[in-house]
Length: 536
Image (cartoon, rainbow, N blue to C red; front, side):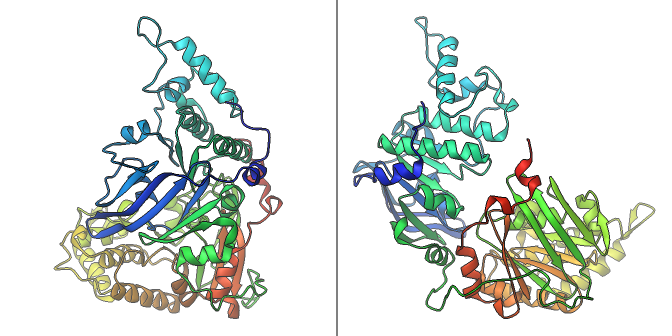
């Protein structure tokens, strides 16, 4: 399928979306243990339109997509296609009904050929009922040609780059002649040239009446290719309307749940070192951090006794920056100096030795070990320090654990209680205690209060202030604007993996932060050459 010659932006203006709803979700609710992921959400997708679905982490986007595509059954409400009620017990039923999905993570079969992946489950057959490989390969080549991809259709998918694999997944979705194509963060692993090809294909889908549901955190993409937008927040429907009728500031405020009545776009200018005594040396300095598709020239400085806030929307590169500083993300370029010493190649172990500790965003997947006790979780990282001749001293463990259980007010029946049995707030405190055991000089906190109750949140915020007063350099990442503004001395804002601005002194306010979040991304030439010229 050859992409259209016209630019997608031009096609969007020439071919307005149709008015008929090809897919509707009416009052959809979905519950999981302890959480209501979707709460009475209604949504409609018109034939021939590109519809943006936006919201921060936990907004309900992924759950809604899984309901629409048959992965989850809703607990309440109904789905309709072309006005008729439908029920999907599994994804294959949604696919047969005309709903095709391109996921952020490629969900194909790596060991199978490119052609087999494109036609999996519907391979062309010859008169004997056997797979007609020659025809399948020819048709695969024809499809991929429309995407500007020149690969051997017989090659195993695993041999291709991630971006090319994503385009193969898109080719499969398009080849199904679906009435609805759902694209979940489709450009996350694509090169600029591949992104342009994707946009041309979307324009062609629209032109033939296919509805496209486009999920992305990249506002620039949304305003370029989408007709309407639906905003979700905390599992609830917040807004649906024409994207052209809503500016970026308003869109960001709805995603984050902030009131725009006092927000003004007034000269947000900021400089990294402003507000600091020139003679005061930073504890940590990062310069030009670049990682393919993730970070583009991020630079920052951290000072003892200061909380540096790291702001940005979902996908802005906040967590990636923290992981880069902690040696948990491979970099293509950049330089890191800690305590005046340049670290040439930083690893996670090297970061710990340098005094850098990271509290990860996902405490369950990357932090706590649920089956181990509170004591075991706290001392996990400090075991080498607590051992002599390879033997771990239980008495030294108990002393350390007792100190941090009391200081952080961890509520457990005893240090031997399994950490998986504690509340979310206490689990977070246990994880914080683990890294404080190492006596770090730099503490990186990625969403430290997410998923915990109000009381525990206040205690964690108090601890952050206390640690800064004691001389730690603290990096605070938070999606909560109020928490970031109240807790940070300075705020560095990221957008698309690149610096978007820095707020210092009186500039640290909700209105200024919203203004930077809603602005346009930096021009490509502002990014580091290493990030732009990486040949891989």
